[in-house]
Image (tube, rainbow, N blue to C red; front, side):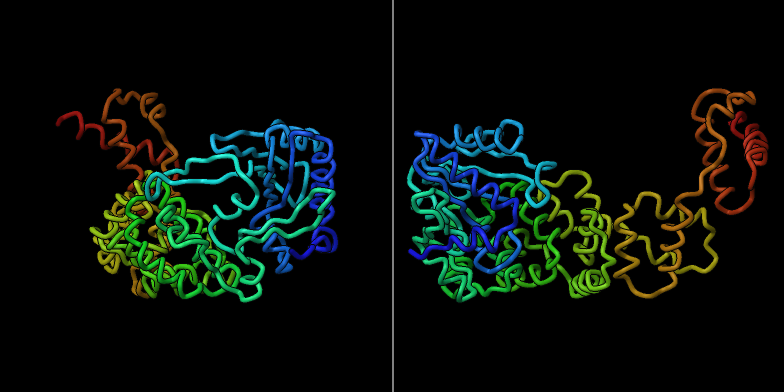
Length: 424
């Protein structure tokens, strides 16, 4: 195997080099540790001369003792341990380039069923690499003093990095874990790689297994795509390979939505708020399609509102084209519509008079509130009860339409309307 020690020095920042050096020192001092390796995406990124992300380490031997010692030496809290023999060291505030260090016990994995969580067993570094998703992520560089910098590459990931291709490790990979289909898309677009033909064939045969994933897991994978800067290209590839339809038959991302996402990204004007991104992405879904997607995602309230809000707005938005609508009428039409859906319509909807009303609501109308409150009305003798809310609503409408402008005028209006309520 080639030696890539130069990547650990000349291609790594001072912070990475510090961690790599500590790994070498600790591994030589702990008898219970047989090997320490930097693994996965960081190896791939170092080879590609890309800025790597957080540090992933694989330990053969006592990973728990190793991670505890590493955390102590960098001044981090005790690592968080998971059921899968992994240990996360928080490094925020300690390093500027690294937010966490993940230490895994070198292990093999088996899957009792498609999309099930894996059963793990302590094993060698070669088995640890062979359990991963793609060849380009199945490489390790030794941080042991005796073979410092040695590349461990059982699946020829180095060759696939040079060929710029995403290649799955084995034919059953997408059956074991269908989320790897989402990752294939993200890696291919993010790295500017192609997906090799055999992997594309395996994806096509495995799309039905996406149904086996829980709504939470599918939603998490979709969110990861949404938060990528190359989201448009990822959505296009997902459409091409049939992944969107595999999530839900009603899930489609229209040409207009993709154009808005692309234009906003180019102008660096796109919102990074998840509800806003969701509303734009789902623009154009009808009510049934939106409900199907919400159900498939097992979506929490915020997701559900952003996905179904577009269809809800579409039922009423044509009324806004009427020229003589008062601001209070605009507010009444839009008060139950989620704001992300209004923003999405402004960006992606047709250039009709309604757009001006939507902008006015977003920028002005929604913020107009009465100065008076329930206590003010009680103080002038209006009795407790539902009358209070009804009178405040009358004042709110009047203020929206410019019929009252001061707090005293609001109080006078409320008192003038009181007799009508008392006689009901």
